[in-house]
Image 1 (cartoon, rainbow, N blue to C red):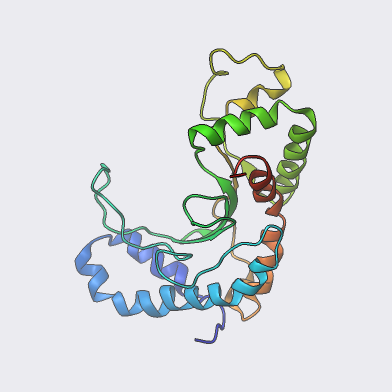
Image 2: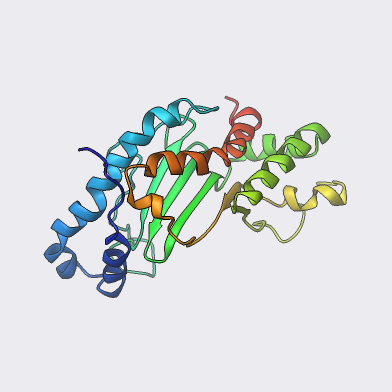
Length: 228
């Protein structure tokens, strides 16, 4: 499929889905979902793939559902929210071997606008230990602070720390406390107004330029946390 841009009617379709989040409505509108959402996003992923592979670090773009395009169906088994569908489209490009187990770049198409981000949400135990070791090292911490500032300048902000206080047994300088309270490093924006380029064949070029501003986050994580 040749990519011609994200359809201008996609945000409206997602807003309709939010208002009619049930199986009957979705099945009646499945062909619209395929035409306005799934097919253009898969074509976009194919367009982005060589650009992402050339980045530092390289990021994988796999044009399949549940690879770089996440499923529209929600897993409601352990959630109080039983609505069956996500009301946004989530694209993930990973810097490692698995889209959910490595740092990545993220794109979100929602009714209200474009979201983008980078990083990794929640470190495993050994990863968390390596992360904390890195942020108390002055050089590595300054490198992280620099890429966080670059992401901020691009409109993506560090998520608030998961912990309210420094973990027991850790004594760190005050300047390091906020970073030590992080259990993952994620920068992102929310519902940024769609640029006109999104709806044109130049979409992949536009998004590549935006995502390049966030690459430093994944590069730092791959070098200092995801080292095995």
